[in-house]
Image (cartoon, rainbow, N blue to C red):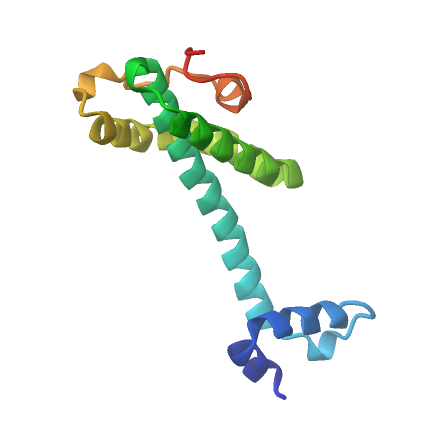
Length: 147
């Protein structure tokens, strides 16, 4: 089967075929155009996941801090899950660890906006600058200053 056709019909099989061609290196038959596209998509996907999980994590930490009387085990579980998934991603990649540092303050406005929507509290309740450090956000025992 043509290397491009396999990519279109069974991407999973195509990936393993490309892996097998890397050892021993079979340069002539590696589907470089689709391999490049797929690797770029994977990199974008990982970054998107970091951003998305960080927004959810920050939003829940804001809820813990500014609406503690409404805190639930579901919020706690969401914080733990998002934090765990972020930590697993950055543990595998120094590049993603650096990306997390770079994007941390950039995603805060979205988390703040989501917190306003979820809590119904006025926008002015939540500071314009993130009230948490990245170290706090990744700390397994930190819940926005609440126990």
